[in-house]
Image 1 (cartoon, rainbow, N blue to C red):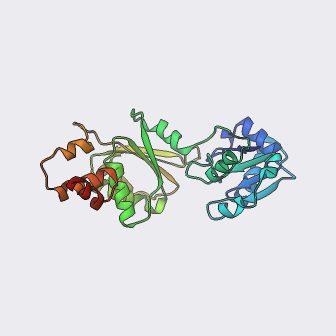
Image 2: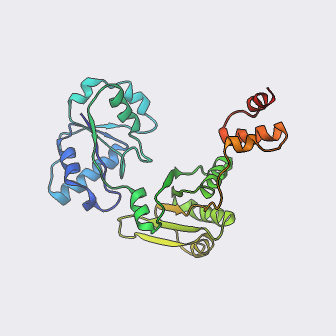
Image 3: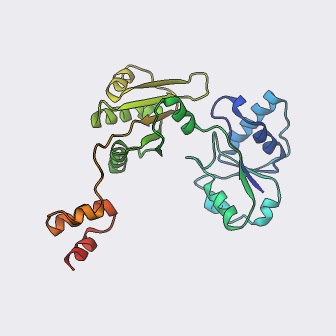
Amino acid sequence: MLILVPTPIGNLEDISKRALDALMEAELIFCEDTRVTKKLLNLLSEKFNLNFENKQFQSYHSHNENKVLKTLDKETFTKNVVYVSDAGMPCVSDPGATLVDFCIKNDIKYDVIPGANAILTAYAMSGFTHTTFSFHGFLAHKGSDRASKLKTIMQSDKLGILYESPHRLLKLLEELKNIDENRTIFLVKEISKLHQKSFKDSAKNIFEIFKDVNIKGEWVVIIEPTIFEGQALNVDDIKDLDLAPKVKAKLLSKLTGKKTKDIYQELMQ
């Protein structure tokens, strides 16, 4: 059997008894980074007076998962097998999903223990009352992919949640300010750790604050959604517009993702 075990994102006391029991009983532990996991087990051993000896550790991360999967079979999971990422919930902006998919496809029993998660913790801390959100992980560092993703987030009717590193946070805040300086932004760093701190203000005000702040730690950023006064256009609305076929094809392509050429040919038939 495979058990996915969430680990603390800061405070060691956030680990559950179920998680500790699973780690104690594990014979094979798949880890995002074996060094990080061994260090964590040492800390848990000291804090809770536990013994995590006689464990087999196997590296399993985004760069080697396909290679490792080829070595696995049902026999592997006759042992007590655990997967842990470096911190937080496996599979949520962390490796582990391909291991779960392997179990599903091969009819191998698995379970996921609930636990610490930076996204949901930040969402609960934000004070936003919106009930839907989209999570985007870390954005591309630069280029058109980053600009396109930011535009999508800022035009969405859902809260946008993303991660950002300390050396790119000011750049992100400036980008958000340039798109809509009045948009409300919530930031929190080092969740559950000693230096946890949060901010909530307009994009303009937060950017001004952070220009003079020594930015440290990993950040969760939550962006207020845009408010639509009217109704969004659909495919039939655009087809009914009195526009040139080429223009209409381009609009429909943007809306549907189909090739402009194919849509144009359909319109001309």
